[in-house]
Length: 173
View 1 (cartoon, one colour):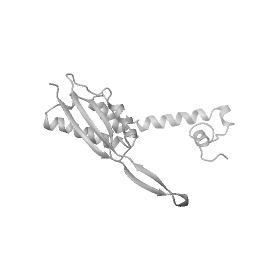
View 2 (tube, one colour; view 1 turned 180 degrees about the vertical axis):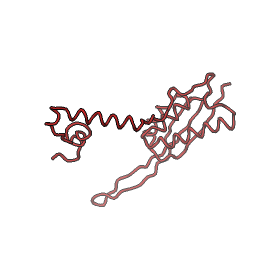
View 3 (cartoon, helix red, strand yellow; view 1 turned 135 degrees about the vertical axis):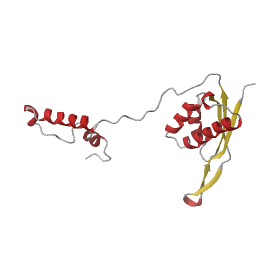
View 4 (tube, one colour; view 1 turned 90 degrees about the vertical axis):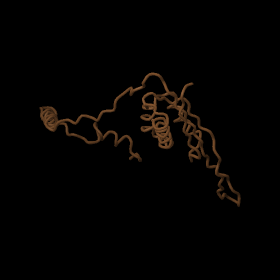
């Protein structure tokens, strides 16, 4: 019999439709890659799903003595929980109904025979040496002092970061 590790999250105060978007992303992935994707996910449901995944990994490690590198997300389902009903007053004494939806998330991790290591490794960026930065800056100044470039004055709104400021301002002038 294949071993499974389960974890569940109930009454998550995010709509199921929004939570399913991220659940579909991690379905079938190894836990390392699923965790990496949830860490970088911009959606609000990323943090609770990451917490749930880490809980399931801890269950596997502590209760079943399974190495996390062998685990993958077998199934993840997002079901609708109860709705909180609120009312907002409207014109002429009427009301409009507001439904605050909740989600129930069920996560099952499966165990594979081979280890699923990272597809990519996250390494910190290499810092440039200060001498290289100074020399690069000096080279730019030397190029700017050549004959025809002296006549052209540098306009901060053209080229470089200034063009983006000009294009993406809130108000056009």
